[in-house]
Image (cartoon, rainbow, N blue to C red; front, top):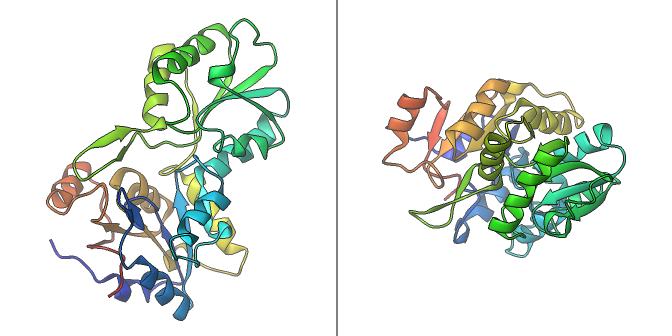
Length: 282
């Protein structure tokens, strides 16, 4: 399996969309040398955005994590989070009441900035639900798994609500060999138990890519084939980019390991335009 040099690929495009986890960072932190990639993009006038299914923090907080580690090129306006799409839905479709959420207090930012009141699942009283207008799955932290997941199940059995999943990821790597269930996986399980369909935002959904495309299009004309989507996961980053009509590059620094990449591509039928060992530029 031949891989391509990312620097040579990048020069073919006017803009690049990066996934975050597995591409720019991993369980150890930032991938060493990643700052050189953004210096290269800026020097060559190549635009860039970070497309992430991470709805655990606001774009400002997500950007701060890069800046605090020396990557000043990633500012809040460069981050497109699935939480932003969930917020847009709430603004237009859930205009009043209190929204219950499963996640951290930081993740509730996406509900609060939609102008809605919030209540965490652990503080919710199942005997007082008249004011609850929606439920949002935001993050896999910030709650008691047994008590609060069961409370969500019973909430949805008692009351018919709009249910929004702000992160479709079902798992994420916690080290080189282990993974943990993500909020998308939790929502899948609850959806099956209660027998209801939830509204989901995040890659590979086309709306995520349209949202990002609109952001970059506002700066000036650009075609989809002038943008490269870079990700580490076939079923979200690569499939989503392919469906939207962009070229895609699978990197081998995250969910897709070098020894299994070819088999995964063949078995899934999801074919990236390119494969790169990493996006780090030497």
